[in-house]
Length: 116
Image (cartoon, rainbow, N blue to C red; front, side, top):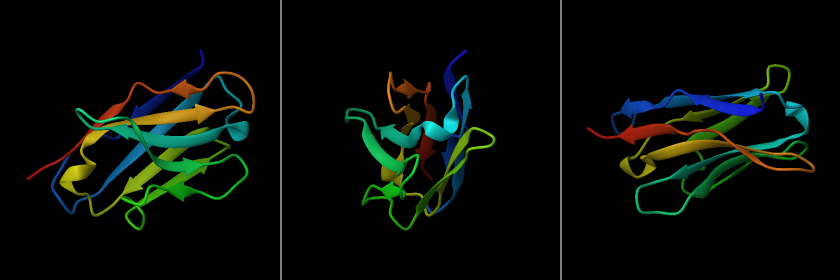
């Protein structure tokens, strides 16, 4: 079955860290451009970080220097290391996959809450 499954969300205090993971099933992972998006209550979904299949990673300005995206093509996994978390990072985080051709994929989302 083709799917993306996220894990690693939770509650963390401001300044803390979390690591999100996304496991891909049923796809040729290495040909996918992968990314993380997030959606806060009342706001539009926004791109957090992107890992193109053959290019350099990119980040939203709001997370540069704090978040790091990485992928393991052999294992079919995508990760997002989030450091120095801020309350405004609170959102549901989604794993995203885009093939060369065909439909994009979304995970079910994982909640990240930054609060004291």
